[in-house]
Image 1 (cartoon, one colour):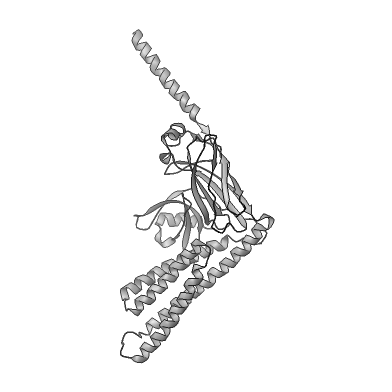
Image 2 (spheres, rainbow, N blue to C red; image 1 turned 90 degrees about the horizontal axis):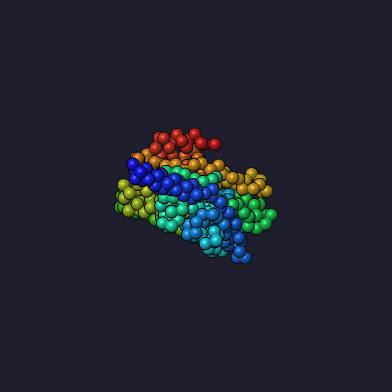
Length: 350
């Protein structure tokens, strides 16, 4: 009887001790973010946190107006609770404007065993307003806006953004005109009967001018600073180039496929331009607008085969702009989303 009582007491004491340890390990997370602008206009992000030493952190830098990435790196919390990134920014340095530095602690599963012993196997010991929970797990996120270029930074950035927007629109218009010209010449069927020399001469004249114009357009696209803009413009322009090649070699099926890809990529390009336009402040002196951040959720395509965890950034008539956990941006045509996700997007359309 006494032995049973003693055993029960020991078990209770162990459980109580374990409970106390769990409570002791719970912590309200603090995480400061301090961007330091270097002489060459690169940025080093430093900070201090009460996350345990060895905690892996992801540090990102983006344009506060457009949300476009300007750099990303990984680091770890040092023994004193401090952390420091490598220099971030494009090779030539950041242009004048407002930027956003963010620090994220990834989910516990990617952390080391000593760190997990403190924060919990799923991060359950972490508390406070900086802690976020989604389907993948618990993360910690903190950010800070800052300016490069002093008091005229926003004005310079707005002027540059307006100029870029006009440039994107002009290039898009020229890509559409190139597509229309190709469609028009193809309908003539100049290559259907190669015995007609007049038709071959007309095709040859068109082909030489098309290749020259296409090459000039590609050069202008390649000169754009924005990686996102280069990708969207380059995709649509590349599809028109593929259509020309398919038409020249009379590949009818391939032509239809290239045309279909062009239509989809053009929608994404126009959605990108629309989103870009909403980011431009109405007045040159206005500060960068804070984006209405939605929670991360799972998005599924119309077939149900492909899924991605991301949050909604913006919605247009044809597409949604999404942001993944690693900061990567996606533009997805509404037609490619599941019915549930299309309804969610339309409900958040401004």
